[in-house]
Image (cartoon, rainbow over all chains, first blue to last red; front, side, top):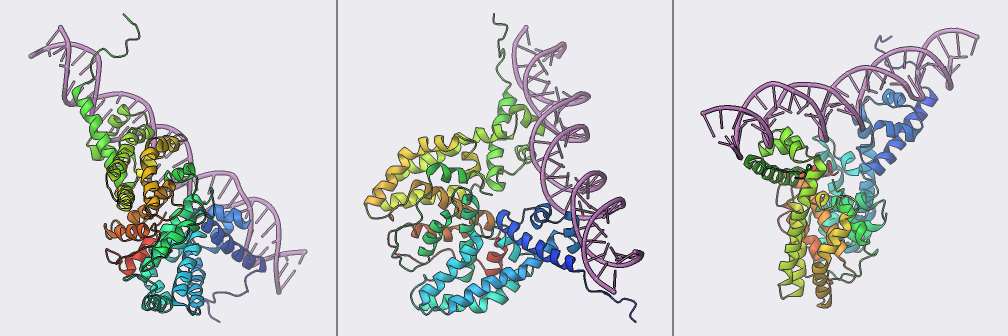
Length: 213
Length: 213
DNA sequence: CGGATACGGAAGCTCCGTATCCGCTTGTGC
DNA sequence: GCACAAGCGGATACGGAGCTTCCGTATCCG
């Protein structure tokens, strides 16, 4: 008989159910409003009280930590799928668009996958082996401009993410236009097509400026 | 003798001096830290007390308002100078780079030139007559992709601005790389050169993700 | 059915930025 | 020079927001 026996009974069924609901709610609230959203928001979205959230997780950081793995796995899956595309250029651009889209649809993505000191290392360890070949292959095929790196993928998703965050209420598809422009900019020599969707109306584009960061 | 005579004496010399110092300080503090910076920060940078700031300006909005004109004039000057460039493509790209640079060096630019309901209209009224011809001319010369608009200039500066804001401490010139990529993306068919400066190291690029917005 | 487990959400705490107030200093006109 | 209006400084009041705790109540499960 260990006096420290950590758990005698299995957790109650409703408790486990709530844990899942909270995590689901956290993912969708942080995706929509960014990690600046409060745990009260998460609790409301989950249909539970705040007290319940704090029973499951010591604090907000713990909630964010719990989301790390699934987000990284999503990105890894994108890279793995792209690897199956035979055309090197299409494979790379498909992956890049996928990352951009993931970020555009998830305002908190950046903050969730980058927490604390070691997440950069962990991110590299888990993604680089699959992503680097995509880049090398596209480069060798003359489909990617010289000096383009995996880091650039991060930054490009940041850029389009900024657009998506600030245009979502005005036109949720507006970011596609800039994703396209940016992806064209990765080609060694672009055969650029017409940008789409159409440009935002001026007043919307201008309004966007007023709340960046 | 008007009983309401609003001002008997000219303002004291030191008072006027302080007004200028506050406005200068405000411009540089908001440029560096964004409009989220406090008036206390501005007062400290100006070397005056907070009380003095509130004596000159009823509130923070008034300070921001006072910066509007000079910022817009800067942008107008960029456009006017670009108009003198004979090569249509170079004129447009020079202007675009200028706007991007202005924003990259001034974190508060967007918020300062876009305040309240009418600033979008005012902005259009003051800039469009000079900017639109730059675009039309570049388009006619086959130097700009179809459907590119003045609004796109706003959004592209927003995108690169997001990069600049988040990389400033790590490498203040990093944004140039993405400005180049984005500007290449505006061409109907790009003859892209090597991107410069070099890519950020991975850990820096990853860290940047953690604090976007 | 009864005790253990979990829930809900009001209330307290802390932090932060805005704005005020008033005793002290400085410039200016006589 | 002197007197007083004009201007200054900065401690502090104020308000709001988010995080977290606490405990009376509800729910589950043996």
